[in-house]
Image (cartoon, rainbow, N blue to C red; front, side, top):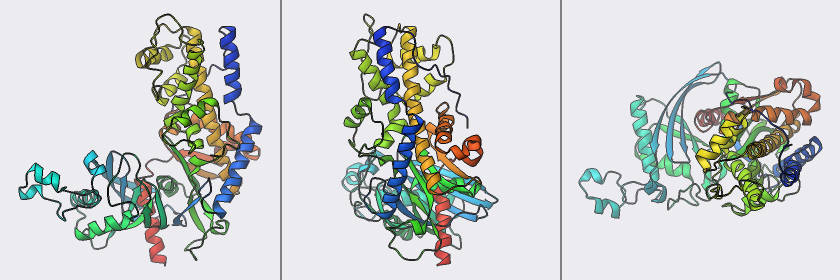
Length: 497
């Protein structure tokens, strides 16, 4: 972990009576004491059980079809494909046993035309330009569908790695970061596009079958053995090096968790016998407490929620993930501006800070790390990024305290989710490893320390030794290494059947 230390200033003690009264209210709104955190953790556990027993619950608790555990001794070549943003990534992971592996990868850009074009090549040819057709012809008859483009990228990568003619098909884990209704470890139906993708001819289809068909047509020695959720991949990428891994979390732009569950606890499982007594569950915990039963949702969170692209959904994610924390702080700042409690000097330009998402969570990280007496970094961020000049010392301290409160609340809520998983799984003093991926966990000052503080309050039996019992650690590349490891687990499952 390389996140800087936070330099906390604590509650505001200087300022006008109005500023002090306002900040006193904000302290109460954003502070979660031990008792309230315990209530949230208890509700989280109850929702986990509901989701394991019944379909269509707020905590979806989706069986991943990934059965059993990694030992760290697995060996061989496995491919991963990661589609879900502006880039498409192909990764070759060579497992060497003893928790060691090597990776080689390539990235290809996914153009806007591909994102909104057809899923498959409409003309049945993917090289019209090579046949001397001009731009009008190729525009009229799209040169390549998304699937053929992906298959071409895999083809080029295999050639570069001298794997074009291997004896046995290479297992591939496909991280497909869109809503999918999964029915087997390597089967699922796309229910909707997100993230700016809108390829025609894909909704209601299986992305694995579409791609496998294209790979077969190109005679590529690749078998897609797993359709992978990135949180499940995070768990597995941690587990290869730490076989006592219980859970994987994403705490970055978004938030989610996955953990290993006993089959006997999955009441809604109707698929018959499995190859193991355990299965990884994708919790989809960003939706936890959408009903607002226990979460301390403030008026500033409600404003963010109302103006988001998915109002009334993913409320837990909106309180704990990097996409939203800066916006919550900005909502408090603009409320104070409306009450003439902040940045009220004559002529102060406030148009930038008045814009949605203009106060980034990365600013919070830098502000929290500023330990200087004059808060020079806070001043520079407000000046350089938001054109807020001549900010007085009290205002600097208020902005810093708002970041502390919102950042600490996020970490404590994350702690409640981890503690719920730990208690549910009956972890004893031998402990468990938890792999976490994401910029918030990796870079936000003291985020990990605040999670540990929250867990120590919720797990008093472990409090004296919490860091050695619940071992949090950075698990990189769930969508690459993790997907390849999922392909490895799937390959083992197929062979044992």
